[in-house]
Length: 278
Image (tube, rainbow, N blue to C red; front, top):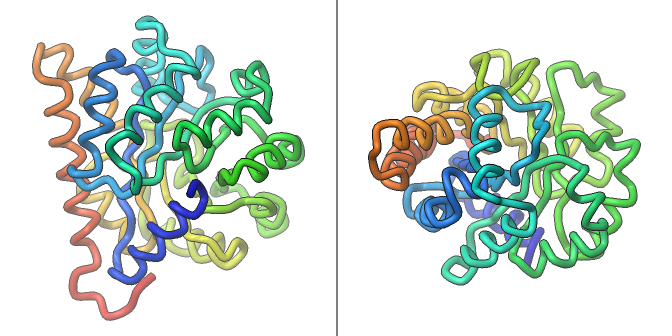
């Protein structure tokens, strides 16, 4: 299925007239078994797609919350191989929810692009976001992913002009990830009014759904973005919940899924009463 699973999910949501809620979690945070429990619970909590981060020691696009999540996961021994094992375990009980792997290029180089693409597809991954792989250097990775039926999902930013967008969207499939704020994750807040024209421009350039991430932490902010985008990505708020639950010695899975559910409800209700679909 792979890429087809992403396409099917967005087609279904378009028929429903609502945006997708995309939940980002870090593989192995705070430990493997808890991370798997969170993964398995996310669809019932309202996640339409899941972004599964694999920990990396130098996550340059991430703010402090996801940096700390990566450090916790690495300290527990999580690896890229372990991340694929988590995805495989998730797929044992869920064949429908798209799973997007998100991370950095160096571990993929070490694995080998063709072997990685084959193994990721076998584990049930549908697409890959590689934060530090610019389009000009992506051809070998893109070819390997395409051969395995996986989507290469690229990032567009507020500084991506029309000429740059043409380059970004070439070879992109599944959806385009629009970074709503300049800077790293979990620091600034997204402004839906500013995001709306950018989403239209990216959608027109790519012909694909546009997911908006970075700077979305609250149900209110998620709802505002859901009115103008095809998908809303939340990460820092969920990994913050992991850290807070650990600190409070509470049930981490329950805390994260409760936060995800509140965000998902806001996204699902955001367009209630609207007569047109984005």
